[in-house]
Image (cartoon, rainbow, N blue to C red; front, side, top):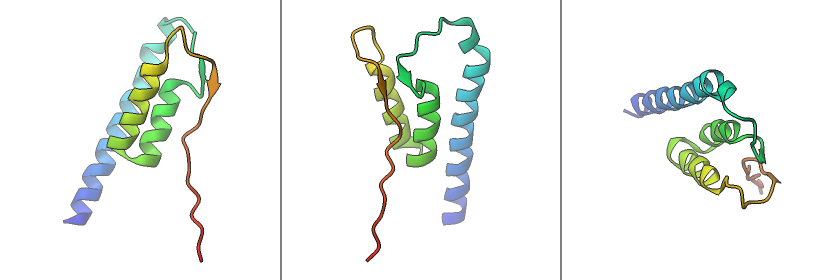
Length: 87
């Protein structure tokens, strides 16, 4: 059962990342380059989905896109990685 769920999760994650990459190749060249953030929102979405999974990564990516407006400050934000300390 868990193997099937892992495969479905992997396929959905791959499909979402593939669609973001297709957006970057097809739509992005025709839009004005005015991204305030580094990494760009699409790169951040790929990193967040890959690191945190489909649901939490998508929420982080959507929250980043919502904050991308003319009144926000320029920022460099990467996906946070928590380091585990082993005792």
